[in-house]
View (cartoon, helix red, strand yellow):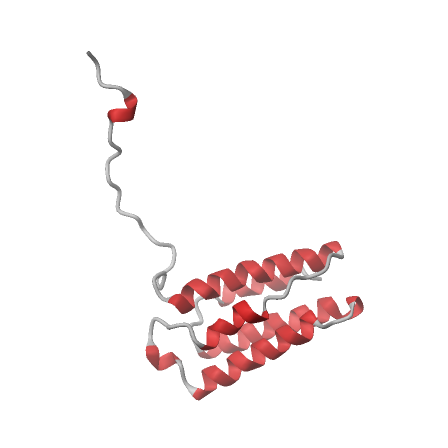
Length: 131
């Protein structure tokens, strides 16, 4: 009697990560925030209402980073500036959505120039389609 396909085991493969900090809660949240920003951009471009992400993104102030030394007063100030720009965006009239979206992206870039510059190239992609 032959062995069925369901009895064969797949060889274990080492999982390689595209993200060097994939286990840190802050890194995980930042990747979700990027996806949320893409969703916001698409909603704005389609003339749809944008969802609120303030509560979810507010966790950036509390999420554990890869390197605890990142959580400085400057990080907190920049995080709060991001959240304020996000609040402005979410409360924007339709005519100001694109400009205020760009403001949110700029606050992301400003922080990442100080901390963790790796994602800057990817963050810049958020601006390209929100013209």
